[in-house]
Length: 361
Image (cartoon, rainbow, N blue to C red; front, side, top):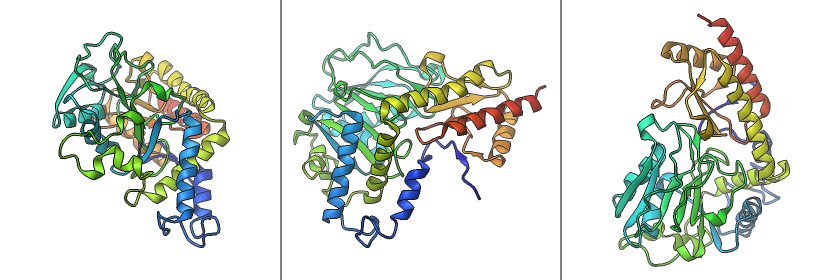
């Protein structure tokens, strides 16, 4: 069977070049006579690999020298607890709730202190980003938390909130490396890698040095301290070696493509093709306020559940898979991450056009 066009929200499509390289090196990585899956994380070969991977990420994102890069397990969801454990000195934090993942992070933070919901878009099924220009920031808040791109709902902050001098913490799982970012605007910027970077099972947290201390909440497990992992170069325990390896391949692929400026242009063009079609379609409609649309996740509906189901079924047969929308939005969702080729979006749009013509009432 040939490759399908995989529009999954995560785990998601990876660049074919990366998959081919990983396959070629499966039995013998760089003359070591073994796979990365088999080698000790304490070996020189792996130490070189993790250092090279970090160096490439630093170059891609232009990460300042006063930030640590941590390759951690537990995915983004474990960070929901790890962040308050490490940062909630005053036991107060402000959360902007723009989707399910921000909501889960907000709920988790309530275990450790006072979490304030200072803005939300839940009143309209998270279909927009609230105005964050003059938020009721708590004077004693340790940080302000956002989820920058909302995978389920297809929204994205186009401008970071005014935190009034407070630390900004951002989950960027589904827009990681999709465009350039100014890391210095964040105290912590982190994301699960399984959407736009690599296989499932890891989160990359980029943490400013002054936030990495032994001054954490009482009872914080050793494995949940940023300092534990920062001091050990992400090798305190056995890391997700193979995931780090594949992420490293993706970083090299991104560099070969021209870096994040080029990816942003490419992603804008790809998303534009799909959004332009949705805006003139008489059958399909996008669900997000135009100015808040994500470049990575595009939810859309027909307004008829049976028609939605028919579309998903016929699209799957035609080789466009994982288009069923999240149950909280319904309809469809096309996740068009960095590795989704332009032709995948063009062919999907052509298929949608054909489906519309065949199903006009």
